[in-house]
Image 1 (cartoon, one colour):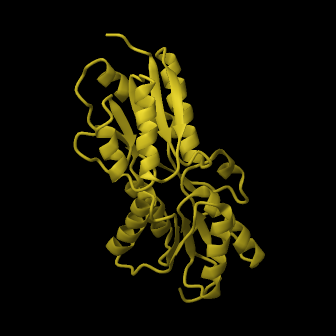
Image 2: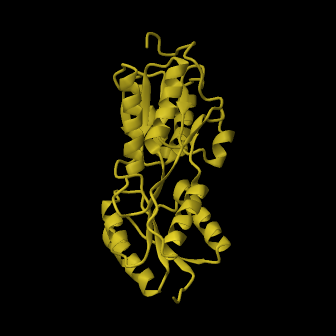
Image 3: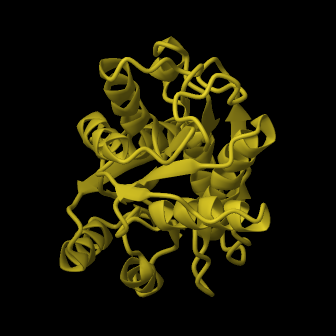
Amino acid sequence: MRRSHTIGVVTTGLSFYGPSQILVGIERAAREHGYSLLLATVHEDPDEVEEAINTLRERRVDGIIIVAPHNSEEEAQLAQEAGVPPVVFLSAQPPGVPTVSVDQYAGARLATEHLLDLGHRRIALITGPQDWLEARERLQGWREALAEAGLPPPAVLQGDWSAASGYEAARQLLEQPDFTAIFAANDQMALGVLRALHERGLRVPDDVSVVGFDDIPESAYFHPPLTTVRQDFEELGRQAVEQLLEMIEGEEPPPPAVLPPELIVRESTAPPENLYFQGL
């Protein structure tokens, strides 16, 4: 068999930390195995994804990796029809499509249960865009952890993953405060939350605890250092390459690779002993 020793990568969202670090992991693992990459950056339109896949196939790549953080059913179907081995970054696990992911639901439960264990009973959520499967799964993990504790979910506001959106969402929450902790669905939004609380004269974690998600390198240097949920993005990229190379060698599609998240406890969370919002 003649091979190009080239892997095609279709990706969106490279302005975000997660997808960019996944790409780093893919590139490093591919290079270790003697493969180079052809990169196609697309927006959210499935037609663009299909066009990118067709272009990569015409360039005779040996396999394709799709980093699809948005609604991904169409992308998964396109991957199946690509004509070359595919791997998709997808928390759902459609039959016949090899996938790699971090358990987003479990990560949200880790964050929420950490706050519950500290004694918090009113935990607000700033979720990500709901066209991202990861955001929906984090919302579900938060909601079900509260339900199992016998607690009704308090306010939910939606951001766009940016620090600015976390800042604005926190300002809205502070208009009618009904929380002692805030779970922000990524670290950038948590940064905005910290700014909004500081402007209001609230101390973290003395008055309000804050948890993020992703463990970006800067989160350890926030003020205070951020408690967050770590995802090993580079390992995700490596796992995708390993799966793809198995199929390029003619092996059966491997089972889904689901990596566990890890709770990183720092100084932004504490028991609600000195409540700013009395009576919650």
